[in-house]
Length: 273
Image (cartoon, rainbow, N blue to C red; front, side):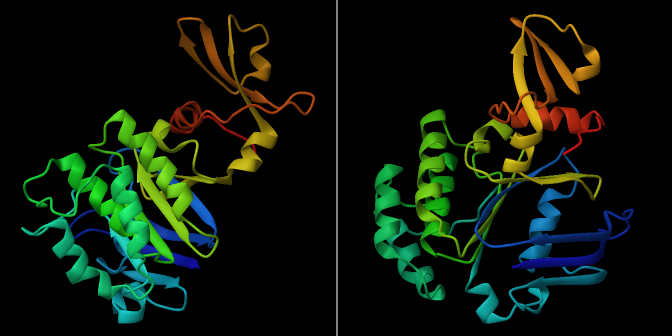
């Protein structure tokens, strides 16, 4: 699906962001792309979608070089940006004008998701709220059935009920031929839907593991006190005691706490998977 080899990139007059970045991703995954501000998350999505060109190295997505902007590539990719642009038209006009650009577009799927998000086709895009515009663009992206969906901060602007609906419609809409990459700071918003975690820090991939690998090797617990610090990779104080990450003991598995794991990685804690 995606093969990145020795990718080098820097914005004009800025220091190198990506240096010899290499990454392989297959379809059938929902990937969480995590990192602090300035880590390179949005830039990587722009490189994958062809909005930016690498200085050197190779990006191959299903046999296409993104920056070549081949129509067959563009018709099978959708990027939802953090601040999506919408024209001064009604939702139904947007669908009429832009749905034909995507050969696998599913109008019925779109209608069902619009109902879930409580959006009406007669709403004018420039008159509705930022959160409503975001929900529409997400709905449209899912209805394209594109093989590659890139979502940059998709839950920004969504209220708590809408975030729950977002997770529901995403899981229901994706099939094994698609790859979804979600870049976000809102770790808790996506931890129940992703199956792979990638962490970027200053243009480097510092963590890249499937969720099942993490669950097999690590436990995430809340304990009243810490008795054996040698067996604790990372801990955070909480009102009830401590949130901790430890090696798996006696084949016991716990749910992965992505926020705790992300904080550990950002604190340069060596997490062995």
